[in-house]
Image (cartoon, rainbow, N blue to C red; front, side, top):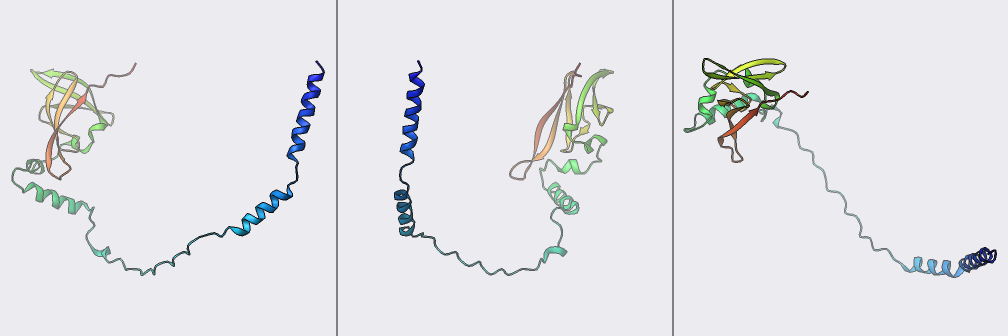
Length: 176
């Protein structure tokens, strides 16, 4: 049993001795290859001349100003068959100041045969009925069920046309 470790040690020594062969030949080959290789790097182009231009639009109308957007909306409303025309000529309701995703339906009641929904917005409770407006996209309630509020919104499509889009608010059950 003791001959096996001795044989392994002798074999390992022989392998390591073979690795320590003359490295001079390898070094000579590396030096010769370095001398023969000529790098082929194209020269860099000089940078283009920079001519600064003064900013002349500082006195122009800001393209994102609310005044400009209001004018554009009013022009759109003057178009015949515009879904937005009747919406711009009415007084805004309080719940139109909040986005739909900040509202949650917490219940529904029926008073004198008419359905009402209870909405929580900013920790305040609001009672809404069919025909009321809510959300920032001219949303109008079309139907109130026990578990959801159906509404239609007026939004711009990809072509810039104002279209009606259906939406819903689902009843939010409180987690226990």
